[in-house]
Length: 158
Image 1 (cartoon, rainbow, N blue to C red):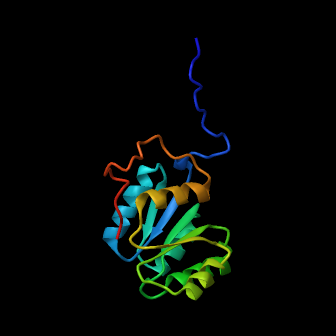
Image 2 (image 1 turned 90 degrees about the vertical axis):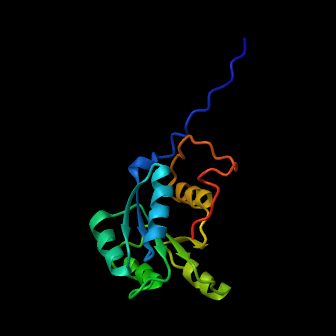
Image 3 (image 1 turned 90 degrees about the horizontal axis):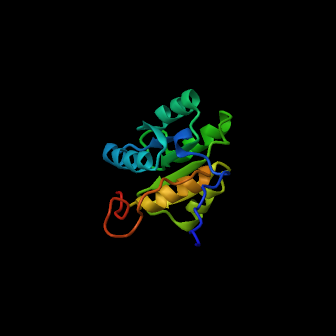
């Protein structure tokens, strides 16, 4: 009598509940959507609506990852990335997101920053965003059905 082998979780991967993701965007509706996606993956979240607030929260909370809009009022995303490095927080990984098309030269300039781990253009795809966060933080995705049958993980975020 052969039994199917049970897949065991990779012990090298952390639980998402142990990780804090700071979401930074000046569009509150997009923040709400990103927060929903990231929390559904099991992560803890906090949010900021501008660069100054993001820097304060990074100092206070020491998040494990920052999802950062590139085009913020006042201090933009690139300035936030550089300020994080200058403040000794350059080891916190950053995913930069933007709704503005950028030429390849500018995208490469941002990607060269040591703490920028990924660059994504809006509209964000929730499944791609979730997989990217799990990959960067080396966490186990929750056991959810990820089929493309039109479920909550199949649409795009703008």
